[in-house]
Length: 147
Image (cartoon, rainbow, N blue to C red; front, side, top):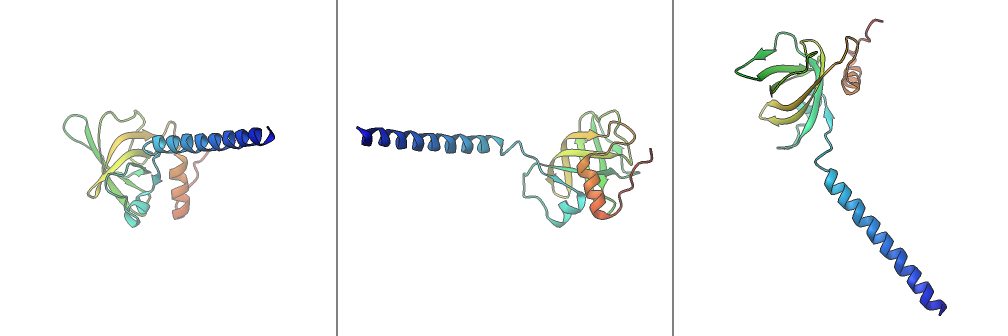
């Protein structure tokens, strides 16, 4: 009788382990498209993303590059003050989007141009996305806002 109880207990533990492994694999599989890694323009140029990879790019909107095209198409360049990437976006920009301001865009590279599906901008005069601040600090060009 004791051998049967022990065998059932081992079977239950193995079944729970298999169920846990399967659920972890399913969660990871479901999330693979939802994870977008952040890159600065310098990182994009030194380590190009693979074709079709969706990622986030951030930096400052380069002054003098904002061009409004036909309809809702907008093009501009994003820079980390070291390298610059041209960006194309079709849609409505956030109200606080401006040249010289911090931004983060989600999208993919098409040739040498980043085609954004979403653009996020600063929400007040002192805010800059954390990833952009970290990238600018790594470049040694970050200047903290005056309070």
